[in-house]
Length: 258
Image (cartoon, rainbow, N blue to C red; front, side, top):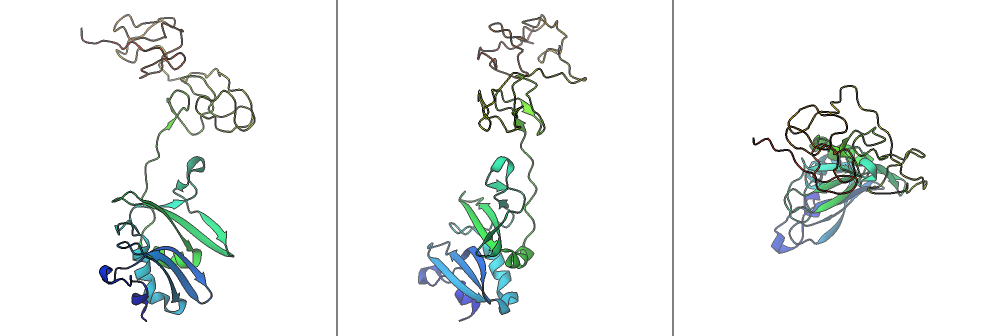
C-alpha cells in the first residue's frame, strides 16, 4: 500500500479524502500519525517508514495545518501552544515538552472557518520537516494591558495603577493581583492603596473634555461642567470613566455644545 493510500480515508463516501494529522510521533524506524477524516470524522492511526520521509512529509505537512472538523486550511492561522502570557494555553513562543523520552512540540489552531480549537503535537525531529512547508506564526499585535481594578491602561512593569492607586503586583511577593481582590492570593498580603507619583509630563489639572486648566480641588470644570472629582466621595475621576472607580457613582460628562 502506498503512503497516499495510508493517508486517505477508506470510506467510499469520502472519495479518498486526506486525513488530518493531530499527532505525529516517531516510533522506532517509523512515524506514527494519528488523525481524522475532516468529512466523516473517522479516526486513523498510520505507520509510515522514516526512510521514505522525503516522499510523504510534504503531504503530511500540508494536511497538518488543516482543520479536522471542516477541512479548512489554517497554515497562516496557527500558534505555538502552552506558553502564553500569564500562564495562558495559547502563546507565541515554542512550547516543548517530553513524553515517552521524546521531545515534542505543541501547536494550537483555532479554525478561521468553524472556530474549532485544536492542539496538535509533533516530535522535534519530524517538526523540522513539517515546518518546511509553512512559515512561522504571523505576528499579532499585543493587546493593551488593563488595570484589573479600574480598567485603565497600564504597562507590563506597572506595579500600582496610576489611576485608581491600587496595587497591580503584590508589594510583598510580586505576584499579579486578581481583579477586585483585597488580599494577595499567593502570600495573603493586603492590597493597599499606593501613592503613585505623577509623570513629569502629565497634565494633571487639565480637563479631559475641554482641555481647560482647573484648580486641584475642583469638583466640576468651570467651562464645560465635566466632573473632575467625584461629587459623592471626592476621588479623582479617571479619564474616560463613566462611573467613579471608588464608589461607582455616575460621572457627569462635560458639554461643549454652547
